[in-house]
Image (cartoon, rainbow, N blue to C red):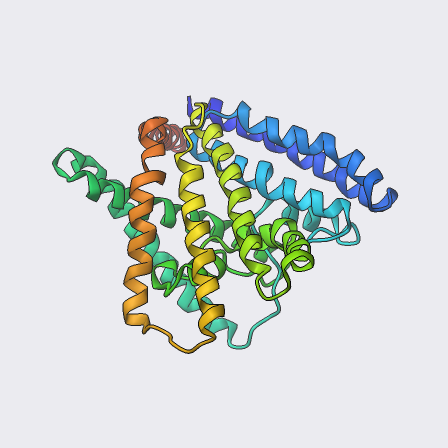
Length: 345
């Protein structure tokens, strides 16, 4: 079972790589604008279809996020010669930038110290993820809210570790400095801080040029520059809601219930109100972070427990993920046993 999933995963990603080679060539030969967009649209449609070929919640979910969302949005920007993709870069770097959640940053001083601190940070999170996986054996004795908290932490640690590993691979191959994808979201002091500066920064970075900035230009012409960010922020959350519904469809192959959309609409509305109040008060009053931090984290977790996390149980994604862990363990044990037999012989 594991080998079949891995074979399907390899086949899908060979198609992805071949498609991105084609896109790199199109960027060199076709001028930006509608003509380039016409040549890239078949790849966009293909990237929407390919995740349906994967049934693994881990491999399929990550592939859907990488190509159906990130790569497609980057290719749409590439059609206009905007965004992170550039046909002048090498083909391997173009492929990595297109389908992986990475962003090149300027080198920082004292990288040795920061790298050591980051290594310790990720080691702790790997250990905590291991503890969470162990704790699932005792779910029958846990309160439902404790289970939801474990699921929330599992999602966060899993995403951060996987994205960090991907960035480390690209860094080791290319030697480029890459920006982190998370910035300790549990330290957020406001919704603006959480969504804009701490949670899944690659999504923030790709939604800004594709949704927020076009909406901002249009809104500025209609209601003026001061208040234009309000409808622009809300529009960004609407698009994010649609894309998250699509991601959950890839995971569970079930019709959406609208709860994911409601989650992002609530956050979009509350963030819009928060920004509006900040503009209206003009720094006249700023509540202390010791108050806003727990309120922010509590609001994110509370709405997540209510609307977001239940989608994993509704689609049986959690059950299939646990089965996948068991299958992977058995497969690794089988491989180790085979290697031991070869060594002894």
